[in-house]
Amino acid sequence: MSRTKVVPIPVMGRHTINAYLLLGRRPVIVDAGTPGSGRRIHEQITAHGVDPADVSLIVITHGHIDHFGSAAELHRLTGAPVAGHIADLGPYRSGRVREPYLPTGPMGRFMDRNKKLHARAEPFEPAVLIRGETSLEDFGLAARIMPTPGHTAGSVSVLTDDGDLVAGDLIANSFMGLIPGRPANPPFHDDPRQNLASLRRMLALDPTALHVGHGTPLDPDRVRQWADREHDRLARLDAAGRLTARGE
Image 1: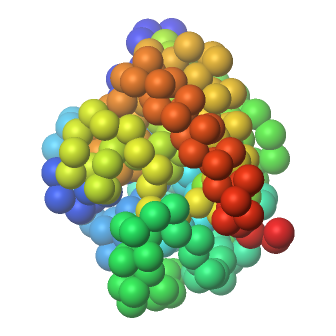
Image 2: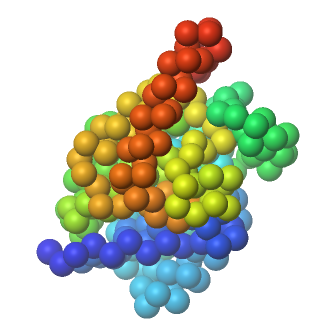
Image 3: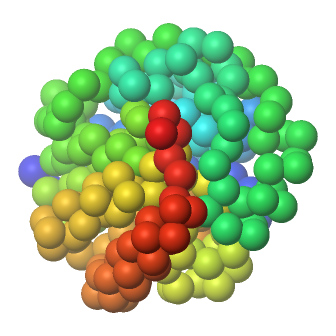
């Protein structure tokens, strides 16, 4: 099978919110942006020379509204089934994010006041329910869906056989992509320690690049250095009794 090409599809701004088009034997979409962005994603897919009717699958990386908001619309526009992890089935079926959001810092506390984050998206039922590592070979892509819980319980990433990791919100660029190439936490994590463990597990697979939901692709070595610092930061917070996670 030929090399899989990873094409960013900007949903908001140049890099603020990204979906992705993965091109192999058949195209696969990763993430569906905010509510009302399905048509924009559809048009950008067409602009890249892809017939949207050829899309074999829409993979949703997790149950936050800026990633699954237009999943139902995009399903109607392409006819492709939607894949999502069973642990985020509640948000997908209800159209509402599991709350409260748990901020990772000042940016998250600020964004939590935005009413759009608490809006309801159109619900959908994943036709492909992810429970563990899942090959995408049957969908025409040399890649695997990898569970990477922590940002949400049902967060997943897509790892191509060429080493590209489409990582959702496992990691981000600073300030929602405003500082390109600089690794940072996204504004929220349900469980920062579990997310860091998932990130380190993916880094151990030696990806060539991390393609994220917010910002430009990240260099794995820079992310490893950031992960070491994040480990120390979380340890200090834990020792001070200031580290919380959903369900604790």
